[in-house]
Each structure stands twice: as structure tokens, then as C-alpha cells.
Length: 356
Image (tube, rainbow, N blue to C red; front, side, top):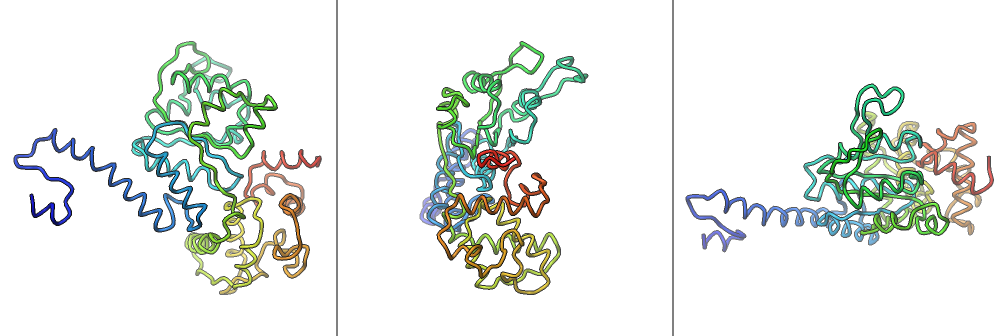
């Protein structure tokens, strides 16, 4: 035992082994091992499926490590396409709930009329067509983690019911008054300014405080350009593998362009652009000529080259969205997919600018 301790062992057991003592040691040292693995991932420039070496992302990785050790509610704040679901997944995978379900639901992807039944389930006869009972996302996520993306778009009629679940950890399915307990960790995310929504009466202040226990703010891609070369290489390798294509090189001037661009759709948009260039390109080296037309225009012109001029983010974002809509012949779903943002986010931007 002494020799083992000198060689780096943390503890030891004497024979014959006692199951209770073994279990006690495992419960003591497995969390320590998990924390060490998290730190090794951070040192290597990533955690979970997230990648980044910048100071901004290293801070995010450190926050993930800290909140993973807790079971409190987490609110992830960031623009569309910054990787909020990846953060939620990383928190779950590094928590004590990692062997239980991770259930994700995007509020904007569900019609308002279906959100309640999707979240809480329903009993037979609850409404027309409900011939059999169905469990909702809260029940399916029992003992695990429920991730609710775009929580700011939750209808006001459902906000009191979500608040009650967070206060009592019990709920009744649609069509029933019988409540049952649920053991979940809730992670919520939003690309909207919830404090402003509270001020405008669009979001309940008590629900906001229930959600805003632990907060992680994700930086937009334009705030961490040093991560773009790593992301480009990762996306190229991944897309090349999926499309059975050789991985091309990236010309320095293209990489400079990508690092200088504002990326209104953030990492999701960058990935879409990389996949587009890989599939549509024939050369072994990607250059400015391979950029999608909506993104490039004339790369050397002052209007489109992000290294020139003094454009504000609002102008660049509006230009990219209007260009994508034009290339999509007004199809908002296709334009949103091209930009790497949700249709509801696109509609909100257009409404803000007075564009129908």
C-alpha cells in the first residue's frame, strides 16, 4: 500500500474487499476524475462538442465545468447560432445526470397550440384526436435534463404553468387535474433580451428570476475571430468525411475574409458556408471565389469586404438577411436556413425593420 501511494495512488483497500468501502471510495474519486477530464478538455481547446482556444471560450468552458457540478437551473444567453444547445449538452454530459435522458425542445419550432401538450403530455380524451395518453417532454426527461431553447418565445399563457413546475417539480398533463412529481434539471436558453421583455410585460418577472439562477453568456463569433481557423478546419474535415470528398486547403485571403466577416448567424452560419464551399468547389484550394454569392458579392469591393469601410453590425446583418432572401426568392424558411438562424428570428428582424 505504501509503495502504491508513492507511485501516485490516491487511496487503497485492504483484502478482503468490503463492498461498502469500495462504493464509498468510488463515490469519492469518480467526481474528481470527471473534473480532471473536464480540465483536460478545456486545456485541449474544447469541451463536449464545442471548440475554441480564445479567452472568451475558455471562460465559457470554465463556467460549464462549474455549473455541471450543481443541479441548479441554468439560463444560457446568446445570439442565434452561437451553440446554446451544445453548451446545454456539455453541462448534462458532465453532470451527475449524464447517464439519464437529455431532452431538447425548441419553443419556436412548435405551434403555440401544441406547446403545452408537447411539454406536459395529455390524457386520453383531452382533446379531439387524443385517443391514447402521451407523455410530455417533462416526463420523458425524468431524472435527466430538459433543455428548452428560445424560452423567451414561450407563450404568456404557459409561463405560469412552467413557473409552478419549477417551484413544485410537479405538473398535471393536459386534460387531467392529477399532478405527479418529476425530477429534472432545467436548462433554458434564449437569443432575446429577457430583461427588456420583463420591462415590456412580455415575460413574467418571477419566471425570469426562477430561470436566471446560473447564467452563461455565449460570445458571438465576431467577438472571437481567433477561433475561426480552428472551426474552419474542423468543419472542413467533418463535411469532407460526410460528403466523401478530400479535405481542401484554405487560401490565406479567404481565411482573412472569414475572420473579418461579422457572421450574423454565428457558428451555425459559418458551418453552412463551409459546407457550401466544399460541395460546390472543385479545386483543391478554397479561395474567395468559392464564397456563396449572398456572402461575397465582389470580394474586392468596399461594399462587401469586411476589412474595409466602417459598417455597423446592424447594417451588415440587414444586408446579409436581405441578400439571402433575394437569393431564396423570398422563401423565409430557406433564407433562415442559409443564414443559420430560426425562421422566427428572421421574422422578428424583418418586423423590427418594417419589412413585410
